[in-house]
Length: 341
Image (cartoon, rainbow, N blue to C red; front, side, top):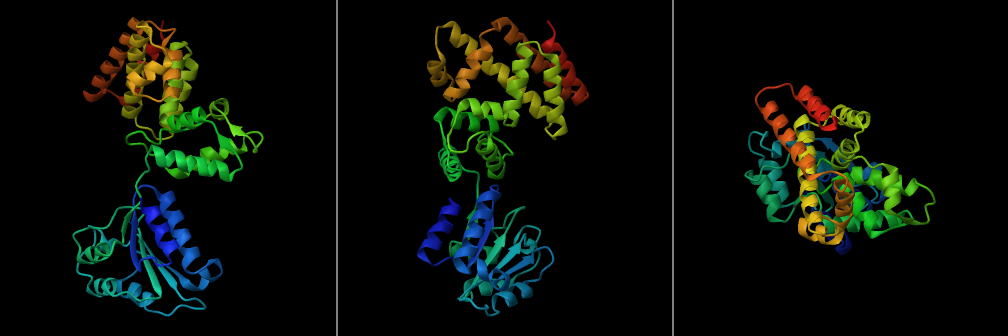
């Protein structure tokens, strides 16, 4: 992972002189940049030896000139260029001087191109030169193992520990690992901080506390919505869907998640009918134990026929939207059907 590459460079005392940072996980990108700044020039010298340029307005000459200027009161300096368009597909023309600099950079300067939007164009000669030296670093979303390690460290930094089921609940409720999830580690950090601020800080964070804090995530909100449907609580159902719509969630995505939840419940119901408990159900459905327990609790009071009917209603609503029906109205009509007795 890119942040690990940066940390290895720092520990070795030899960070690459020219690097490109890009990717979805801005938290790790910002954290890596901060660690580099501290290691290379120190907090006390940031005002003198950290140059920040706007990549949408600065020129190639400005970048190279800044890199070739001597540092003040420190052995090294850093030049950070934000969203430099010339290295992306939007850029036009050659970057002969910058390419030459990347091939033979100043020994006392660390040049970093930081992309919060877009990414470098690998076809450009300058990008190829940087890549040749290992300087293209993508900060991608992290996997389950890395996420669990990250959460553990954040919790320990707050003088707490977290139980395994609370960890699984936190990950599941936020939906960070879901395909197309828009959650970032900045969002995860906010949720961890909520848990650290909940009650006594010197303690274990439990499953009950994760549920009590009310973590917001699309998957968790849809679970609560379907739970309210199975309990015939229309006010809560419409409150949740309106909150999701106001937060910018697409109707199609909400509908997909509702149908997905009913599909999971229907499958869980079939397994329950065969006498399987939560542990066996988790293995057969390939879900986390925490999710399996929630599915069992939600599926138990509902009939198989009702679940099949709800799934058919979701399919009909999806078809209606695809054939031109009003999205919001179709979703509200579906929910009205789902909560009607």
